[in-house]
Length: 188
Image (cartoon, rainbow, N blue to C red; front, side, top):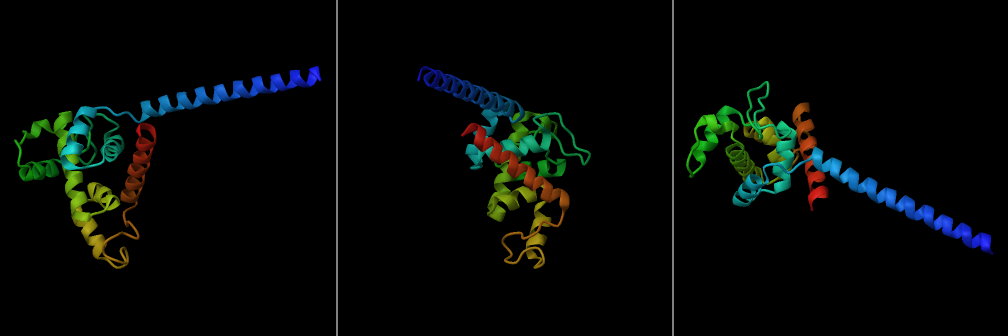
């Protein structure tokens, strides 16, 4: 009987140790993920997501996917800053914005880039009424997504895409959606 009680205590100690290790591992994994998926520039993301009614997790996912939070990033296509705005898109957004238009040189300024990137997401969300389509349009352009929606081979209802014909845009949409789910899990 003493031996049985001793075994039970040992088994309980082992289980408690394993639970502690699992808890520490989960906590450590969460810290690692938060390092990989930061909420940098949160004051700007919060401000402009609230102003333009965009989910903060979506904005963080786009920034993470586009630039990895490098405010000086420039793509090989010429997109600039945290949210990788093309110069002509930046100019177009500035012309539509009723506020004070920043000079083009501010495209690399984190606040300005986030402001116009989130504003662009807002316009795309309003235009297409669907987050997936807005993400696709952020990558491929509004005109292309509109064309795809009018193609019966790509959209059976003209409102959603059954297929995204550009492999890189399809990959981009999946990456942003995955990053958004990670942000939701980490910070909700």
